[in-house]
Length: 372
Image (cartoon, rainbow, N blue to C red; front, side):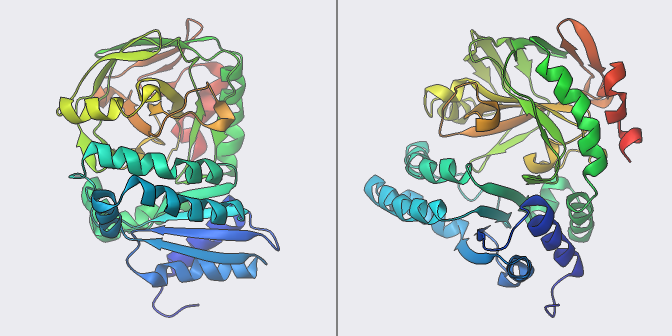
């Protein structure tokens, strides 16, 4: 064991390498360390990759340096650098993405035009990564703890507990929701300020049980692209591209956002104008993790909260592809629990969830008390 490295981190590394990424002998694994300040954090992951018979490659980036690149770099330079990174990505079998931000708003003052040029240049790298085995997770930082309103140690313990839990029971219980979603045409969401309907017909439902994101616990699909109608008022804050948004409300007509509001309408509109696909939904998902019960102000946790749903504006996932393409994929969470005003989910006019709890007989096993 490496001296000075938290034993909980070693347990996380074993989960990530052997369960989530399922690294096999001879596989090439890229570790992307995004704003991770302590290189010792990477050591257990490198060790586990080698012990699994894989080959480890490391790419470290600092968000302060990325900000400078966005501000002063040219589009031509971004594209050239992206070409180098794309060739590296093509050679990989798996990617382990570790987030360690100490300032989640580092990109907040980067002009939207520069951010868009940067994102567009590197989109091919992200698309290629999506073809590999990949897993994304946080390591504890003070910034993440502050977002969650927790002490650094309490946050660290919560993160390690949720990321290394036994996902097998949850995975089995998810099958009933996957089957029901695959038989469903029309979905309707009702909540305070929300009356939204759409079709998910013939778009696959996919369960997430610790293989891609940690922590995990959602079943996702995507709406038929032009089927989304109505209004949705989100009751959680949402961080994207260094900007935190509150009180987001979106109105849809034939799948497209036609009106929007938030505490910062200018920046919200800029994001929605990133490209044509940014005004369409690329993902709809239902969160079921029994251990995550509170808003953490971190979408990697919040989108998994039992009693929540979320939508992503922009790019659809290949596994549940509705054809939407965009440089953004922005997950925004709606809580349906009573303390947030409650809400209902209907599948083909049948009530399947009320106030954050499943009421459909086939889905009762996904309520928290049945998963703990």
